[in-house]
Amino acid sequence: METVYFQPDEGVAGGPRSNCPTDANAADPGPTVSDVIHALERVPLPQSVLQIQPPDGETLVNFDTNFLTEAEPFDTSVTLVGHTVDFKIHPARFTWHYGDGETAEGTEPGRLYPNLDVTHRYRKKGTVAASVDTTWAADYRIDGGAWATVPDTVTMAGAPQQLRIRTATPLLAGS
Image 1: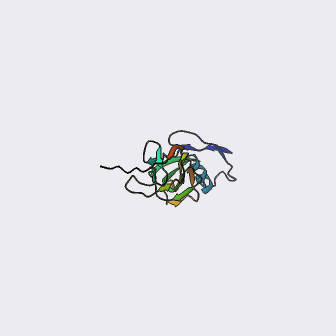
Image 2: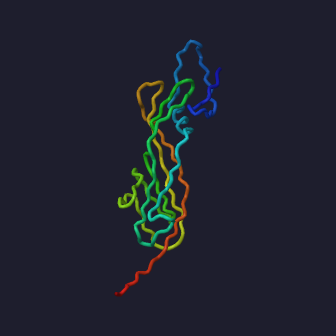
Image 3: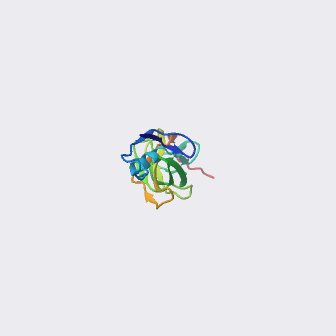
């Protein structure tokens, strides 16, 4: 019996996996899909950083408040039960938590003004904690073989940011 540990290229070890071949001469079956899913769950994924426009933590009631984040695809490799597993990891979905009980989900990370891809209108004044979660998906290959899709995803919750919603009173100014 041998015990094999998951180890990403960065050197952080994961939990043990026992491998008990019934025949000492049997071919190594390599990592299972379940092993690959567990390895993806251990890959250090970037946490979403929410950007809000207007900036400085304040917006207005009944104003299109713009939300965005940056989430770039990346590649990484891990060593798993003696085999190299390459991952192509990409953001698949974003869940926007506006802090007032409303959420939205989509595949776009939002963009800076004047592109209003992800907006929300607050209906009353107050302070909320808004955040964005990023769900990551991946393709993988083992030892340089054919690429396949990991049949599961991993969601990273973003840190909440305080946002003050204010009211504004319009004033007419004469010349």
